[in-house]
Amino acid sequence: MAERTTRGKETEDAFDERSYAVGLAPPLPLHPAPQPSGRRATRLCCAPRPDEPRLMLPSATELDRLTAPGAFLWATGVEDTFITAPHPRTGRMLDEYELTDHYRRWEEDIALMAQLGVPCARYGVPWHRVQPAPGTWDFSFVDAALERMLELNIDPIVDLVHYGLPQWMEHAFLNADYPSRVAEFAARLAERFRGRIRWYTPLNEPRITAWYCGRLGWWPPYGRSWPSFVAVMLSICRGIVETTRALHDVDPEIVAFHVDATDVFESSDPALAEEAERRQRIVFLALDLISGRVDPGHPLWTWLLRQEAAEPALNAFRERPLELSVIGVNLYPIFTLKRMSRDRFGRLRVRMPYASGALVTKIGEMYFERYGAPIMISETASKGSVRQRQAWLTDSVEAVKTLRAKGVPIVGYTWWPMFALVTWAYRQGLRPLHDHLLQMGLWDLDPDPSGRLDRVETPLVDAYRRLTSGGAAAVGPLAPTYGCRSAASTSDRGV
Image (cartoon, rainbow, N blue to C red):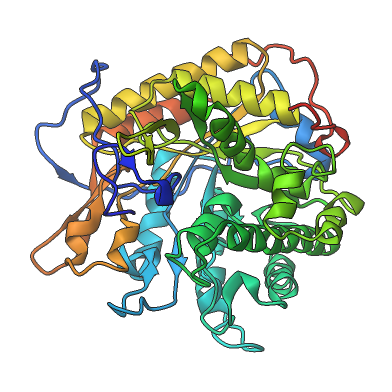
């Protein structure tokens, strides 16, 4: 979370950081929401009754179930950024499970998921703990957590890589063995849950990962150039391809749920129209690469070659493209909308005004038009007061309803994270952890006198539970679509 980014303004070097600390939201019209008389401690619930109907995550051959008119998936998740390399100046790491006390309180946190009544949840696997050294494996924590989710009738959507890698992976994503290493890790986990867990995200937000690792220089391998960004992006995408194939070798019924960050670039300056268009195309680059869309006719082909991408490396993705059977989009009202301008010194500035629910509508239409696949909102939330978070929940769910009425197959919604997170600036900062807590969840994290981070229930818990208990009632039936098509066979030329 970029500390140098304030009041919704970014420098050129930080144009699309996922900074949860940016953007001061303007006052919003408030939607009715139950208000507590005071903060109350979280209550835990037991597992749902086995006879309660719910939509399970479909396997690869059952994906048509996602687009049935009355089908809809509600989900949540625990923030799981894992940057395990100590910062050179502070020595701090960014392991969200450690910082939010999830390693110790995982049973309680998973019980909170069950309390929401969600049929599924995104859950990250700390690779650095599973494989602390090459050839050494320890699945004890992961086995216990995933088993408990299954016992509580919560289907895990396993997040295999969330930005960071084990420390022993020299040069991080630029390690020549990275694609084979991550594929081996994925296969070993999938073998343990063969036939029981079917949804996996090979790597969360490849573009943002490449940005922080290759262009901004915050995370290993600390690149700070466009060629480095492209090199990291290509290696990440090779890893995604190898991981997906390894998963399917274990179980052909596994669904690879490809998740990336969304951004919408705009500018009122005609001189910046070309730059805004290029950056918008970069938003789609990872999905375009793995689905075999980047060929000499692709709008970024020449730019990629200028950034030292080798033609054989680009062509390799077209030789064995992946099908995008369902796409996850991460979007937030606090930084997904990007407005570009020049300051009085001619420097490029990108501001991030607080967006309305129209952002969800625009992104849903944009991604379905481009890829023709079912779409799940895999992350969304707002920061700030409970009332402001409730306003975004109401507005964004209403936007999903609008999209579904148009036949755009939005098949699920994830409030992420379920409780507060620690901002990314913690790793290179010096302030205490509690100063970096960002309340974006359904529960707040509140330090008690002993330093424990209590999970404090907000009225959003009841609001979200009402949504999940109603199935598709809040988002309406999915109108007939104009056809979900195979992403691998769809040309991107002219997009």
